[in-house]
Amino acid sequence: MATPPDNRIIIAIGAGLAVVAAVVLALIFGAGREQPTEAPPASKGGLTVDLAEAQSLEPTRELRCFVNGQFVGMATLTDCAQRNGLATDALDVGFDASGSLTAAPTASLAPPPALPTTDLAEVVPPVVTEQPTTGQPAPQPAATGGFCQRYTGSEWRSVSNSMSLNACVQALYAGTCVRPGDAQYGRWNDLTLRLVPGRVEQSNDNSRFRTLVEQNRSCGIPEVG
Image (cartoon, rainbow, N blue to C red; front, side):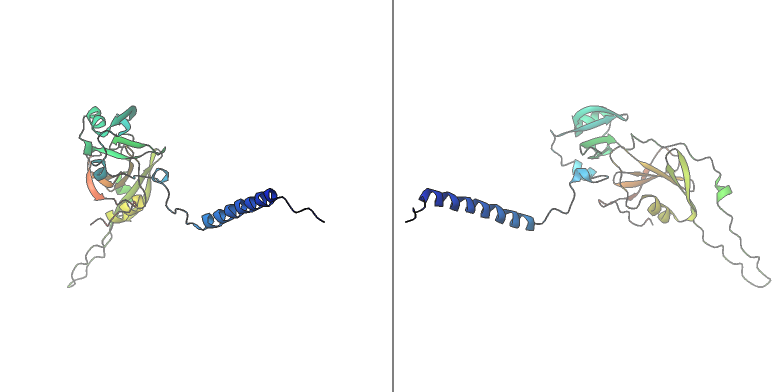
């Protein structure tokens, strides 16, 4: 007669099967969960914290602080503004390439480049109109755009010699964001354009800039009127 199996062996086998079944079920249900589709803020390019949100940052939270284009250590937003001799709303606040929260004066890491030496009269063709015949009204000159340029590397490059201001701004900056303290430059006729975090600015003297149009959080730019 066969010896009956030891109950302890049966219990051990049953426990092992239960563990295997639990692992298999966990893998099945775990694989079915949706994976996050949005990248974390630190991995996104461009600005991820705007100036309005900067006012709601915890007063004791420290950021990477830049003064005169140089990293000077960690500081609160208020302390960093004081080191720069500016108000807190004059600082760009956002994530840098390493994903660290950073504060820097606008365009402090990218000052305006020298103006292009090309004479606009050499690149913008004159408007030619037909001479009116006797008894006919003079035709109106055709509407033309301006000369659009982009500063890249260390030189100015032509984008178009006949483009409206809005078209130039869109061609230069639509879909592009810059990080705190950085800037991208362009030109439309005699107007210097500058993309900084959250807005596009303009200047008539390549020194004093004012806001031309705000930029939304998805790096889009509304139409410039």
